Length: 178
View 1 (tube, rainbow, N blue to C red):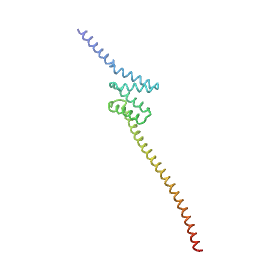
View 2 (view 1 turned 30 degrees about the vertical axis):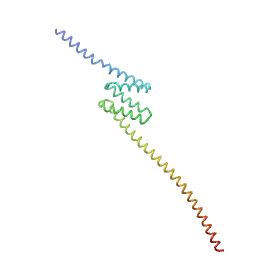
View 3 (view 1 turned 180 degrees about the horizontal axis):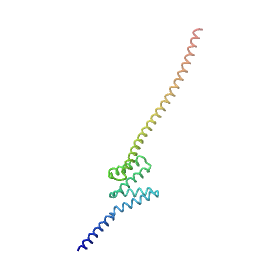
């Protein structure tokens, strides 16, 4: 009987170890997808990697996998090109890492990158405002240049008219003296 209990407890212990070592099929699948995405990134196939990472983020959350997928997706969105759209999508991915995965190893990186993105957005807005101010100043300069040219022409015309009047005045004085 003691042997049976010992054998049963050993089997139970081993089966417990076996169940903790074998992962949930979803977890294993997500880890395989993440590995696949990393290989695609190494092969410079960013479009496919982005699709795989997006798929990971739509599935149930797996700690250590989903957070990395969100972070890598944020980085890939930054390379997209359309500034406002890509930084917005990247910011949303980083916000997800920060809100849902506060204890993740990717959180410090997400904080840094999110701060840079926020600063970038501020700089882009300031640049847009400065560009608008420059355009307004160029338009004002063009208007002032036109007004200056017009005033210069009027000034020249007035000077010529004054010269004509002087001549006429001199001629009148000469006629009066005769």
